[in-house]
Amino acid sequence: MITIISSTNRNNARSEAVALQYFQILQEKGAESKFFSLGSLPSNFFHPEMYKTTGPEMQAIIDEFIIPSEIFVFIIPEYNGSYPGILKTFLDTIPPKFFREKKAGIIGVSDGHAGNLRGEEHLTGVLHYLRLMVHYAQPKLSDIDKMLDDQGRIVDERGLRLLNDHAEKMMRF
Picture 1 (tube, rainbow, N blue to C red):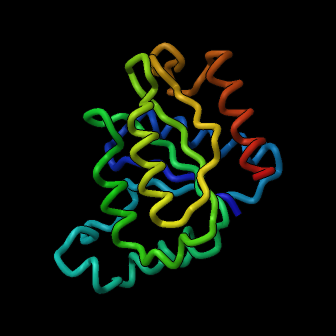
Picture 2: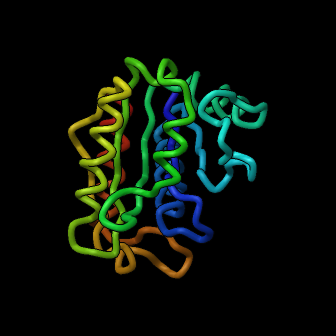
């Protein structure tokens, strides 16, 4: 099972459009996969006890998207030279045992020229700490606005090739 995680809770995020398109690519290739957006986190997700006690809504997310997955693909937008804080908070609230010895892929999304290279590096360090094996291929979708059509779908040939190649690598990982 591959879980694609749209790694922001911002409304109408371009990275979520990319994540949904990546999910569709996996589905078309026949991969068993699920899609989860951090925008779907419960409104009571962030509270002082979240590091000690898992509420029923959060437990349902863990049971559906984390425990059964062997591979996670994080689509990460660039926020202040890294990845969104909501992703770090999300990872911090999940017991590390549910990530150990699993695998991860990362795709960076950015308006800039580096495609969130620093964010990919930062997230790789955190995922290694959680004992996830991170795939070496980490596409960087730079100048994202130039890759998207009016519906928010990647139509850029290079961007489509990067998503398809990465999806195939994750299926073999």
